Each structure stands twice: as C-alpha cells, then as structure tokens.
Length: 246
Image 1: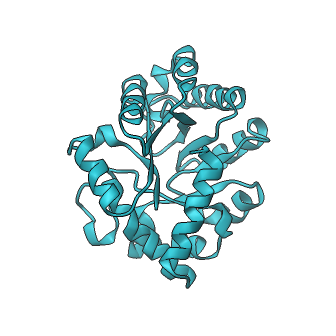
Image 2 (image 1 turned 90 degrees about the horizontal axis):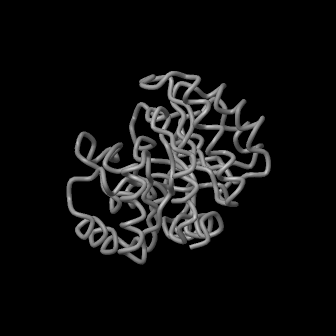
C-alpha cells in the first residue's frame, strides 16, 4: 500500500511514530508534500531519513506570495524529490491574490517540465480555471489531481490522461459524487492518499489523520469498485511506481 500525498511535518506525532505506524499497516511508500520553503525542506529531510518516504517540492496556492522559483528548482534537483507541487488554484480560502496564484502555478508547471517530474495539483472551487491552465500549459506532463473533488469534470480529467488521487473525504456520506468517480474511473489512473493530518476517513472523522489510515480509504474504494482490497492496493502501487519512479 502507498500514501500518495501526506504532510508529515504538519502532523503532531514525530515522524518516527508516523512512519512506524504506516509500516505496521502495510505501507511501503509515502509521498510527503512541501507547500512552502520550510515544509519543502522538511519533506526532503524526512525523505533522506526514511527509505520509504519520498518528497514533493512545491508552493501551495495559499502561499503563492512566498514563491521562490529558483529555490524550488534547487530543491527539486534533490534525488529524493519525485514530484513538483502541490500547486494549483484555491478560490475557497483566497489567501493569496488570484494573479499571484496563477503566476506560481505557471512557474511550477515549467519546473515540472524542466525536471521531467509529475505535477501535483491542488484545486478548490477553481475547477474551470485549473483545467484551462493545465490545457494551456501542461500538455505532455504527468498530472496528479490530489484530493480529487471535481466530480462534474471527471470525464474531462480522465480524457486528459490525469491521475485521480482520492483522500479520506471520499468515504464521507456527503461525497457520493466523488465516490461514484472512484468506483468508475480507470483503475490504471487511481491513487489513494491521506492528505494527513487533514481529511481523516469516516471512522476517524474529526480526528487528525495519518498515513496509516490510507488503508481505510483504499478499502472503501475497493468496495465501491466491487474488487478485493488486494487488487486495489496492487493497482495503486503500480500506478505510483510508474509516476514517481520509486
């Protein structure tokens, strides 16, 4: 099993506890994701320390004002960095002006192109603008839609060849539209994640999330598809290995 998107540095337990619990739950790979300069460095430090942890280097749209493209390029060259992002557009919190978000997004698309690494996308209440910019700028790149939430645009995303990564919110009773996408999207384009410490799955809702809990999300997706958990786990392991080269 894998966790394709987590934030170890945002979680309260020490990394040793988080990684140990993940290993006990059967995880063999985790991607910890940077969102600003400090968390990018923390992600790389964790990836250097634990053989089953890898890093993504990026500037979250809410931190767009902190973008340092030269620093991102430097950090992205690290051999334990396997993806660029998370980047994208966030019109829900709108903590950064939209023009700065777009500038940061475009810069990270170019870094992904320069490095040949996949691009991890965050989008919230900005589906149309996110997809338009990806169409304009990201042709030929491997794109991962983290915490997939664009149920109404799912077919467009599949047609574009993007990977859809499902977090714990897919298990919520209110998320039936997202669950339907998880049940029907091509198996070779699926990933599962925690986004820990956020979006704990339903049985732990309201509590801090952690990488080991991805097993519950994977079981939910497998059940929704009518397949064994082992089949789902093998598929997401293959998909992540193809994307991240780990």
